[in-house]
Image (tube, rainbow over all chains, first blue to last red):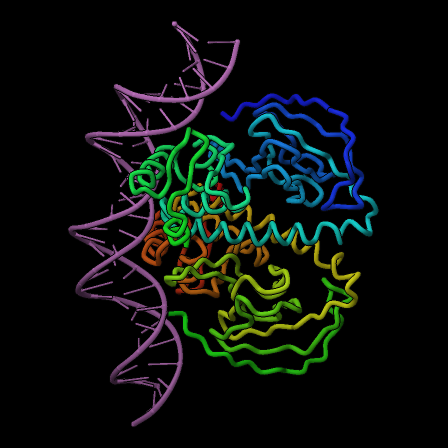
Length: 212
Length: 212
DNA sequence: CGAGATTTTGAAAAATTTCAACATTCGTGG
DNA sequence: CCACGAATGTTGAAATTTTTCAAAATCTCG
């Protein structure tokens, strides 16, 4: 279950200094094919990662294989700080993904750099707790779609880089339930499915209400 | 729903320097009666809080009143960093609770002080996501009891400072389900109920297995 | 184009919630 | 210190939601 290759290719790229962590050492972009591991639970943690293109899932597993994806990271987002000395999670490329490895400059600076990211992650995680703990299937999917739309610039058209299984494992639902909710939202005229991984939001207000 | 008084009493206390945030300015202990608010969502965030005695719940509400408790904080623990400029959550005293307000020293130091706490909180929140997203009622309660036992020194006897409603709102369950699971664990001989808010763990191994 | 993977749909099963009644505990005032 | 009333907790039965199992449909990509 959740088999993965461990293969990635380093791609030297010359590019302007990185914006978010302006004192980090911008490394070349590493390329990870779909399904490959970026880091594993238990591994020694070090750098942060900036998604140049593609998408990443961060997750934990139960002993019997049940999986909870705690976050998706899209192009332009930074991850890898959900760790103290060692990683507590797995991170995998969902699709062909380019990741820039960021080695933070001084240990003194590190904290100042990381804290805002850690706090944002913490707030995000705790908001997700509310979704998983207190919202039903349709509300969860609605909240997810609103979030994905916002992170893609608030456009009507939303791209979903991940499978139904990923969405289910993020929302604490089965793929069948996710699929049924998509169908229900489509039948209600709230969304229009443009393809398996692409949809248009037709009634944003309804979706927003559902999401909370 | 969830009405609360907003009343607390400042209690000057002379005590040795605070261990965890050794450069913070230790303030007097503030006393919060059961059910009173420590801070509210939307309020400007400032200090951290150290629980001297009692217990605190941190939570969010949905528009219709559904509540998700994201964390409990017991004596000896520090909270209040789940915020950027303003608080994103409510914090309330569960019982009569003493809280020491910690004003962090320099802005430069602040990050270094806060980062480990924020990371620990982040890891905790993401572990809780796994519980809410992928574990059933009995597993959730088991995980909760194991956690509470650990935080109380790993003794067999565990005190639960919170109500069944609080436990339900932490685990994403109704009070009835929480109650039924307690009964089930009791009938299985896994725990012994010493009172409504006190129990003894009889089969720690079974509980640990359930919790994951 | 075709085979394997993914997604959708349906029906039955299981888990949890809801609603209702009853039991227990807690706190207050007599 | 006990009694009372309110709040909290437990239990049962029905309703609801979600999952599971199974099959059909669709998509992907070599």
